Length: 124
Image (cartoon, rainbow, N blue to C red; front, side, top):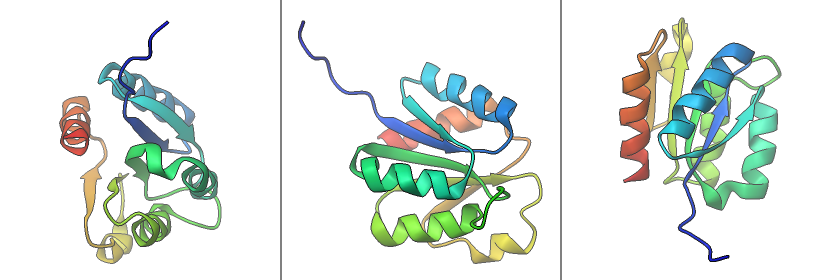
């Protein structure tokens, strides 16, 4: 069996299980392999193991755990400066002022087409 071209990987970080599952389906249909995490700490562990393979991180700002999405984005941009990161929230509040350079913000509720377009941009 021959190996085909590897699909890009999207890391989705969301503590709402329904939204995590929906986003995995959405990006999977956009020809991404997906890895879902419920916390920034779990996402950082995945990135330490597979960071070179990940094309896109799509993370909520408000997460359970010690780190939020902004903390995660800051840590990822230090280690992988060219990584495409999109943060999302229904209420980013004061944390929006602390987004690291090069991190995109998408307000909730987002439209699925907007996520697909952003993912396609990340893959290009």
